[in-house]
Image 1: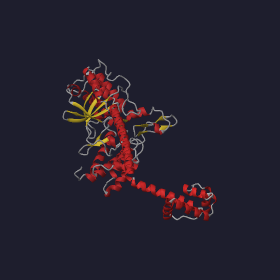
Image 2 (image 1 turned 90 degrees about the horizontal axis):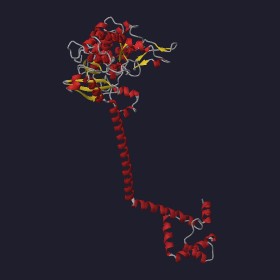
Image 3 (image 1 turned 90 degrees about the vertical axis):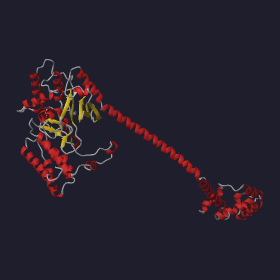
Length: 511
């Protein structure tokens, strides 16, 4: 340290005050060559001639000790720097209000920036939502197209007059998920229903990505003018045979379709009514509503006009689950999301009643009166229930005739089993030798239903039946192959589950 101080003094980076140096020069000596005694005498002489140096030296001496000789100026510099620092901090303390004011100005600018950023992001989100709404919700286009054709006499039906002339059929809240499938909550006089309309002009049943037929030809072009009722009946019979297979009672199903086609119930089917009915028969949901119109869990068909139809409204439109904003959805782990879906569900006895309804629906479409149907989306959003907790199918567009599914899936080219999927849940295997999908589904409807009900039923289940219920549910989920191959096992598991649930709730008011 002393060597460093000596170097500092030798190089004299901080020259001595001018009065001291003048006194030293008068003494005939250079400051760099003063001996300690000479330096002391010169310093005292300078202090006598310049009194403020003595006062300054006293202040420095009080603030910090100084050495002798060449160490003096090093200590002076050190004490001066220290004094300057203390002065700076004292000035900062005195000026504190100005710093606070500057900080407040900075905070105001920062908050203003983030406020404008929030406004920008909010405006962008509103714009995107509005654009999506205008793209998805085109009910006015649907109504205009339908009414234009109705007034030209091309189509007719039980809902046409109310929609286009009297305007008592009103389209309310939009529920559309795809632009070509318009879905609205509607009111028809004193009735509330769901209005569905097909915007595109195509009629071909295809197992592509769309759950409903895609458009290929001009709509409402069949039957042509001059077609007799008998000929139209033959057309309906052939179409039903292609869709549901060669059933023994196809004539009965055709009679049901013709009864629905007579919209004004005058005993005659006009050409306009026939064209509307033919267009609607291309849709899975309409066909299923006619086929299962006497079943408890199928929504009722209230009316139609062209390919627009009105069906019974279901009060609760999802079996379970809660809706959260899509931005929040991105940050929720999958496990937590599954748990959240079960937070807001009815009491367990009511859940058991709803579950029995789903099992009964599976039974209705398994070897039903008019053939088998496959549920290709067994998610909670496809099913709902009313205020009595009776299950209702919310979206039957994803329920397809098994005969039509087999006929069309076997022609699909594949490289792996993942290529042989229709909807979310209808899967077959890929034949690697032929590079074609096989026709047999890998899981029956019952296995898919039990998979959907597992967490729903086990959460809150009574302890005395929980173990048995879990065992039966896992046995049900393990079912593989088509229902035809395991018809007895399928029926046994279905009846056992229904019996177990019904025994537990039959004595309660929820039953």
